[in-house]
Amino acid sequence: MEIIKDKEFGGERPLFGTHDLRLENVTIREGESAIKECSNIEAFNCRFEGNYPFWHVHKFLIDRCYFDVGGRSALWYSDHLTMKDTVIDAPKMFREMSQLDLTDVVMNDADEVFWRCDNIRARNLTLRGGTYPFMFSHDIEIDGLDSDSKYVFQYVRNAVIRNARITTKDALWETHNVTVYDSVLNGEYLGWHSHNLRLVNCHITGEQPLCYAHDLVLENCTFGPDCDRAFEYSTLDADIRGGITNIKNPMSGRIVADEIGSVTIDENIKAPADCIITVRQK
Image 1 (cartoon, rainbow, N blue to C red):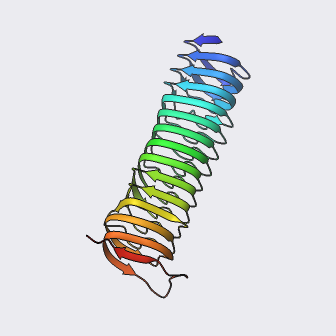
Image 2: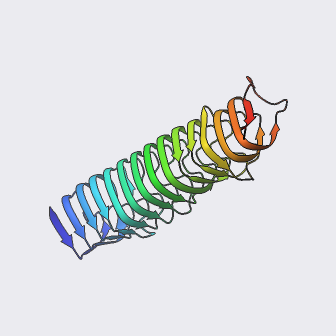
Image 3: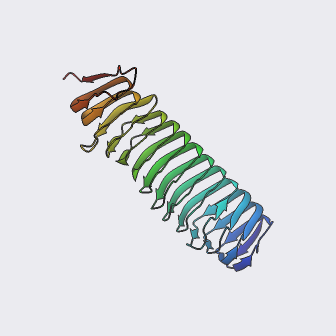
């Protein structure tokens, strides 16, 4: 493997079409497509300032690097990426990618990141700001997520999320086969129109959670006092610990809680309208 150390590159495609290359303490200055159509690339302690540095790259490692604001849209149409201990200040990262393995990555502008990606594995991922992370992505495993991005995990399929703290609105909409363990979910309109969403040992806050959900499962979950009009038009099996402020027009299934503030069943409830709602016997 060729090694390039302590260098600077700029302009158009300075390392285009290279293979079996390790970059150490390299800075990519203003320009475009610095490392395009490449394979078997390693970048250690590098800085990326130009646009689109990693496009159409196969098998690459990014370790202890930094992506400046100018390095936007840096990783697209690529596969088999391992990224460690990296800080990203640029938006629109990770598009149309496959086989991603990330550890200790901080994204300070998480606008439109992880779109149409598959086979994502992440540990200790931080997302700040932006909208629609993970749109249309699938086959995801995350352990350790801190996110305040809006509209996170929309149209996601086949995901397992553990130890997350998500502050948002409209999270987990139109998802299919997603399970969330041991997490805090803060935000309005959680999980609407989801299919086979399962929440285990989670704390949920925000108004109108989990409406229009299909085959929703809650196990040992708790709710904040602002969670009103929950479960409208949903089919579910919900085991709630503690109380829930208000339940409105669930379609079918079972809900059991330690306390229920109120239940609203009105003329707008949808058939079969046979959800069993009970207070747990103490």
